[in-house]
Each structure stands twice: as structure tokens, then as C-alpha cells.
Length: 550
Image 1 (cartoon, rainbow, N blue to C red):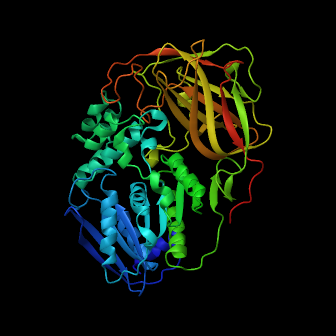
Image 2: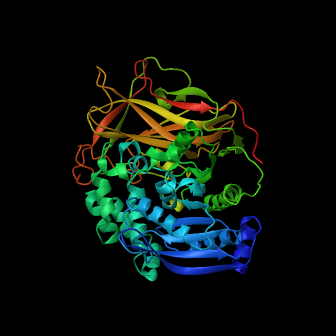
Image 3: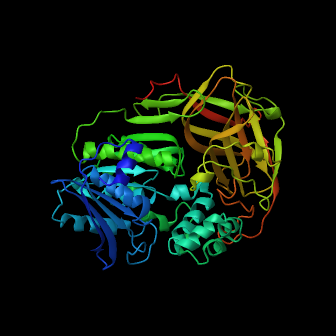
């Protein structure tokens, strides 16, 4: 073992290495069916019969990925790390999700021709490195013995257009990140040191069709396409999602995610489909954001355990199928037999004077807010691509704005544990036909700080949600699922607003096309909470804390 990997392995409490000798061959040319050459590194342990772990990535083969390759190889696996086409020396053009099936299957054919091939392989990776796993998983056959899918999903369309809005911050930040890999290292460091002012300007720029050039200096083709092909029935996405064949996947899958991850709802959809097909995947969800260090450490430990068990055939201690971290005071890790666990659905009603309680309303006047897309309600924390800005933060600055309504319970006489899917139902009336409804659940501590727990947004357009005789529309909002314990003396708070910019693209209020909209129309909206329009929040209450995890 190298001193660096020995120190890292000890710090991360990884399983003991099986070899200290790893031979690394870099920049191998793997030629795929259309003649494109994909640059590939091979980490070979000096162990006979070692199976293979494949990692395909658009983020380069150096830095942390290089360290990851050596750490896995030292634990008894051949590791093959390949740069996706158009990235880090690989030929062709990088077009997200388009070539990953063919390139992945052709790489598998290349693996079969290697003298060290044993007939078995696994896949490992986070985010896009997980998308490429799903692209080939249904056709890889019995040779695929294990998948480690970290903060990822088989389909990205619904995450890109969460609530039928547009995940502007995530998509544009990712476009900027990919483009930054093509500029000199010193120039990139200078941009980061200055706080990425170009990206900040781009997130506020209209029309959105120009935002990629503001952020990166060039037109980013996939960003332009994602602006154009945003309708649910767009043919564009049918060849770029892999969920339709997820039930054909036979390899054991372990999933690792975080409660504040951008892909969590989609990843849990994958879990549900695998379980419905009779598979026995494993799930770990912790107190993490998309790129938080704790997530990466947990994913490496969990991934090595899964590869040991299902790829190398080594006996490992069994654990529960589901392990989740319950946030809040008095929370902690819980072992569960399945997801979601049994829970009691409870409705918390929006009431007059900013109250949130269990008593249904009768006759109450609505609450009115003015939303102006020229001064959009800002997003604060939550599921974002950049870990430093994501997660739970004190929401009092945004709650003090006049365009945000809050509904708060009395201090809780006893702790309340919420574990499972979360939904809201907001009845409103507006002079605008095009608008967004953003809903966020917060935990208000004894000091009055309001910490976001989970949230969701729904985009309202004509005919999407029917209006009643009074002109009111019932808007169902699916929030991120959660596992959180609201301690005794804390309060539940629900925010209702007209958006969360730039996490979601602002709704211009006009119905103009997503990429071309420049006209901004402000307007009033009334949030209704009466007997005929019972706006509320539906929470899954856990019957009792589960047995703590080992």
C-alpha cells in the first residue's frame, strides 16, 4: 500500500487491504462501435481471479477518482475507470445520456477480451456515474453481479423539471462545471476564488436561452435542448431515461442518498420499482447533500461491503434492507425492513393568523401575497448541486419577506417523528393563469430558528389543475420525502410562496416558452383555507422510534 492510501483507509475506517501492490496502466484506448476512442485507466491488483469494477465518468480520471480506483483495487478488485466520450481525452462529443448505453456495452465487450477477465463485474459511481450504470444494467446479463448507485437515478427528466418547473440552479451549475473542465486550471481557480460571478449573473439573466453563454462564454447544446424539450410528452427524453427497463435488471443494487439530495425522489422511485419486481435492493439515506463529504465516505464503505458480498463472494455481516438517518433533536440511525415504513397519515391544516394545527377550518378569510418575478422569492438551502450552499439553513431571512406566508404550530407538547413521503394541498385563487406554488416544511427550534426539512414546487398552467366555480384551484405539491424528529418544545412551520429562485426558474406569469420568456408579470394570489378549500400538509407519523441501527 502507498502511504497516502494507507492513511486515507485508516481515516475512513475502510476494510483491510488485500494487497499492497497495484499496477496502474493509464490512457488505454478502448475503441467503440463508431470508431470513437475512449481513454481508460486500469488498476490491477496482484491477486489471481480478482473480479472487475467499472467506473465510467465525465469528470476526469485524476484527483479523487484516481484515489478511489487505488483504494478499491487494494481491496481485491480490478478497477477500470473510463472517461465518457468528449471528456478528459476521450474522443467524440459529450452529449448527456445519449451514448452511454452503446459505449458502456462496447466497453463490456472490451473487458471480456482482457486476459484477467473472470466473467464477473460490478459498477460503482455517484450522480452521472450512476446514470451510466442504469444505461447498461438491463442488457449486461448475468456477468453484472453488483451495482453501487449513489445519489443517482435511472431517469433524470423528472428531476430536471421538478414539479414541471425547471431546475435552473442545478442544470446551469452543472453546465458550468463541465465547461470548466476544459479551461486551464489556474483560470478555474481564479473564477472560484471570485465566487463565480459569471454563474451568479447567468442565474439571474433573461432570457434563459442566453444564460449558458453568460455563465461559460459558449453556447452549451444540452442546456439549449433541455430548455426546448421540457414538456412531459417530449420525445427527446424517451431515449435518455432508463427506468422503463429497470425491472429487467437482475444484478443486486445498493442505493445511497441523502435527504437533501437533488435526485432523492427519483432514486426512491427506482427503489419502489425494484421492490415491486421482487428484487431485494439495499437503501441508505443519510443527513447529506449531493456532494457532502459524509455522503462520499458512507458510499465508499457501503459500496465496498456490497462488492465484497455480491461480486467477490465474501461473507459479510447482514444488515437491514433499509437504513435511514432521522434528523432533528433525538434522531439518529434507524434500521427498517422496507421503504416507506408503516406510518399514520395526519393532516395539518393551514389556519387564520398564521396557525398550523390539526383542527380543520370552517369559515376563514384567505391570506394574500404579491409575487413579482422581477424580484423573485429567493431559494435558501435545500437540495442543490453545490454542497456548500445546500442543506438545512436558518430560513428566517426568507420568511421575513412579504411574498412568503408562514403557518406555524404551537410548541409541541411531545416529540413528533415524521418518516416517509410528504404531500401538501394548497387551494388558491389568482389573477394569473401561470404561477408556481412552493411549499417548505421547517423545524422551528426553541430559539426561533427555522430549519428547512423538506420542500417541493408545483407549476400551475391552464387546464393542468381544474378550477372550481369560485375560480379556486387545488394544487397538489409533492415534497421531498423525509425522516425527521420534531422535538418537544419545537414547532412545525409551513412556508407557502410563489417560487424559490434560482433553484427553480422563476415563473414569468405569462406562459411564454421557457427559454425565450422576457416579459415578467406580477400578480396577487389568495391562499384559501376554509371548509370548502382545506389547504393543508399531510405528514406520515411514525408510530414509535424504530430500533437504532448498529
